[in-house]
Amino acid sequence: MIEVKNIKKAFGEKTVINDVSAVMKTGQCNLIIGASGSGKTVLMKCIVGLFEPDSGFILYNGKSFTGMKHEERTEIRKEIGMLFQGGALFDSLTVEQNVMFPLNMFTKNTQKQKLDRVNEVLERVNLSNTNKKFPAELSGGMKKRVGIARAIVLNPKYLFCDEPNSGLDPQTSLVIDKLIREITTEYNITTVVNTHDMNSVMEIGDYILYLHQGKKEWEGSNKEIIFTKNQLLNDFIFASDFLHDAKEMRMLEESGKIPRIRNTDNLKPL
Image (cartoon, rainbow, N blue to C red; front, side):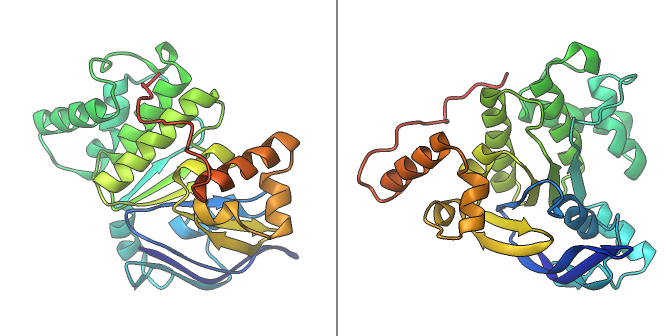
């Protein structure tokens, strides 16, 4: 579990995060949403320690991350997996070498142990037998799945995903969402996702934190968000007539007045 308590962060005279608190539970997909410039990325960087908050606290399983010394933070960071926007793969390395990179940095395992672990996580993301391929040979969805494999290769307790569906088509985005949810529940990870993708909000948003101009405007689940009366949130998520109609349809589904139409269980990795 990750707890964010009264975090404030400013750059010069501009306050970007203003007294934000949240509890992100283990085994859940915890989403941070908001318009561009709302503070999503800054908040995530504060949580992982790339930025130091001006005030407030970040706690990992009850331990104050903000109060830790460098050596103590290093131990926490070994338990963190990160899926970067765009995948951030090393173009000059093969899939196998990209996924093995954290193992080379942080473990003293034998080459066989590392290769076995690489093959295990590649199989988990449905990329077996791609070891010797280079990123240029992969589709956008495959690159994201390699990024996920690399992020979980050290068996992290915490998984951070920065815009995991950026640049992907809608069907591939659903595949990535499904994979993130499965990994979160299977490995009992605390997953934090920074996203603009409203499909992700509706599909995997166990907990959703909506930021508006650096403040926490709303929090709740993907079921609760359908029924929210918060006008700022509704204007942000359900801005178009199409999405407004989709909201009304989902409200009917959730209330049991009509059966749910779509099922993503049979989606195949692309």
